Length: 230
Length: 221
Image 1 (cartoon, rainbow over the protein chains, first blue to last red):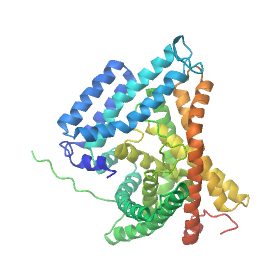
Image 2: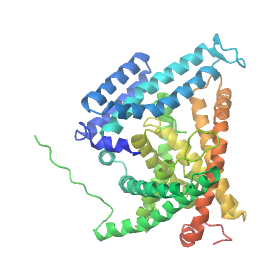
Image 3: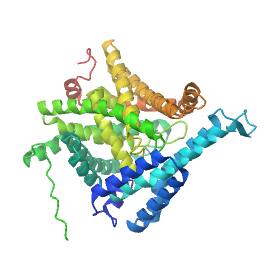
Image 4: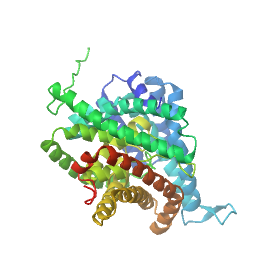
């Protein structure tokens, strides 16, 4: 399924640990990595956070690699662009194709950017893979983020999963009828799918509002926070 | 394309956060006003946000072969206006960072600015302008989605060129724009067509809702 990350966030060794610690740790580490902008520090952060994710949180290394793989692909492509098309310093390598050259400062940019992203990704991964979204939102709420924002976000989070199931069903139905056979038909199918989801979503929103109202919803979703077992 | 985690230097992260924060705060204020007037619109907003998120997880058949997705900005802006869309986009981008590892936390500000503010704002202006000029809303929504999408990438190029001004800001901007133009123009057309298909169905099945939101062209209402 597409949302492995949500499942992992709910099922790992660090799910129950204090979300504030995790949130602040992530933010501080991210800021530090960006401010220092130091190649060695990036590598250290990468190694430490990977060890924490794999060792302490006990997340399957395959899921972790999968989490890293998509941004990595983008990163490699953009850094190649940075190497070849930027900079004005001295030429250190000539490719001989269309006069494309590698310059010293473009190489510097590319390496620093590459390492910075390498350092930051595991930090994001740490938060994303160990903390369920609802916990993050409750943290934000106690940090004075407007309540209305949090509530819309929580309701959204709830609805996303309902939609994904529906999309799954609809897409399978369309595929069995060759809906994605050709380019034009896939456009048509996708349009039909998206608009149907939107119409459904309107009905859903009404149902959701009714169900909330009938349970005495007054613009607040109180949450039970269990006491820590000491 | 989202600017990925850690891609921007620290200074630019802060700058984009500050700019986005001001506009999103205004959007939150507007949402508060809407919700105070009609409490039942909260569910509608939440579900529309979820729709935006889900839409972005659908893969758009792209001509260039690069896999990409519609962002639903144009549609959101035409329906709810740019300020509300900015808030919804903020939440969507946060979810994308945490659930899908698209974009990131440090670059959240920059992403909000390009995808949640510039894109919807342009789309909204184009849509309102065209419908005022008596163009049918179907054509207007195409150009709104198309230009909204395109300008999002122009904004992203600006941000990247500002962060990497080598050898100069102008050359960096041209470089980024050419890179994006190759992949994004077909994509923007794709998003335009998709939005038109969705819009047509909406007009067919929920004309009253569109009318209530004030999203239809004056001559069609």
